[in-house]
Image 1 (spheres, one colour):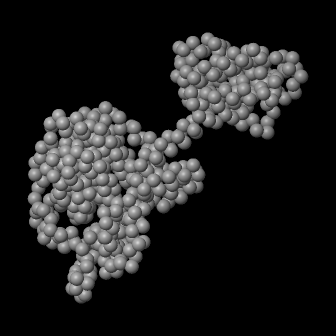
Image 2 (cartoon, one colour; image 1 turned 45 degrees about the vertical axis):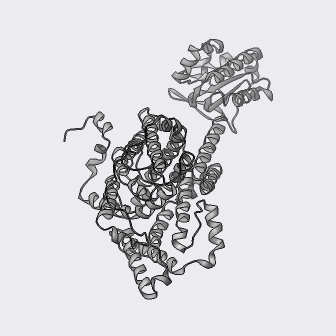
Image 3 (tube, one colour; image 1 turned 60 degrees about the horizontal axis):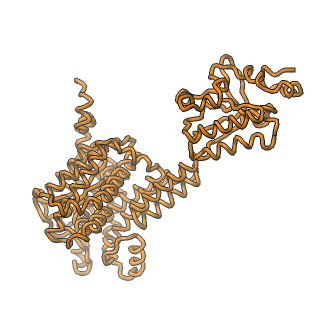
Length: 582
């Protein structure tokens, strides 16, 4: 096979994973796509209503955008479509401009979707996807676990048969459910539990069967039997109801200046929320599947999906936690599963819409409960607890924040991670060491419990000398001679000194001048080329002294003693260096 040009793979990213497609993956993807097509029906309707749009627009948003995002993104399992959080964000952005449900509101929604897509596409083409790398693994774990709880909470009304009066936040749902415990419909609960148990049993004893689809069929049959035995009025098992059929109609966003000038601010906020959610979902699923996500390509895929969707009656469609988790759990192997889910949705709506209309909400809720549980990485959470209490605190804040407000929880987690990173980097590890000559090289060992030179302190700096750490570094260097006035010289073992900026260089120059005034020197051993050139180009090396810099091949065990006070060396019996005298 002739290798494809890199430029062609970049322009058509689906060519990268296409060789993985075979008969087995096609079967797995087809089954996963069928389950995904079924599950999006009640979700699409609910999320469109949440966004202030006609119900069918939620289904349209799970068709063309889903296909485009799958073909032009990088994730093997990410499925784009309408989501709870973005639906709320769209409603909040547009309700100030038009009455929800009106033709004008719809035009604003299409224009918003187009602008969101253009922003995301621009960020991807500008290779700014690396910005989301500031979302740490701990934050992703907390956000994923919180989203899993939110998915489960969003299905409480479908499991219990309660009416929550449009409440959307986790605290409000929990409070309302507690207040209505006596009104729970146990028949509906039994349908959800039966579906959940059917999925667990199928997964345990029929590992090759599409257990989620088996569970949905089993739950639907159980609900039908229950309604037949006790009567539909007594069971009160709600179903999806009548669905619109057909392909999404072509649409045209409103390009009038009044609309385009009013929406950019809202579009930027929604774009950031949507792409952050999509990349977080892709990374979370990628961590489980072992796939490395190309964030810039994901930006491009999401942008193209929303730009295209604006012309096919779709509103903003980010990566969906529900559908992506379900897609992975259902055994999807390639992005074709997302394509098949969109095609399955079209078929369901055009061929068997009357049958799909009798699908109970409780069955869908039972399946989503299993998906929600799969998003909570218990072993990963335990590992975070064992590794770092600070990281675990960040996890808890992200998790709890996500329960209260999804995007705010994610943003708070990112900010805390950055703050923890800055605090950590502002205190580089500074370790007293001693040199040991072995053959042609010198390495350093910790000075704990060993005799040190009374005139020279050797410090290994693990970190960077940057403006955030400059004060800490200065205090550490001055503390050397504070308790031992004879220790007038310092040698920095700089192999682990990563970078030096202007503030760090200024501190090093100040310390070099101070040590000369004390009668000693500031030395460096093993500065990397980048740091050496920075100090030299900036004029700092002239201040410190080029003779104060030793290369890795220099034997400092013999080069250092002649530079020290001979009188002190004469009284010393420690013999730290090879060149120590009488």
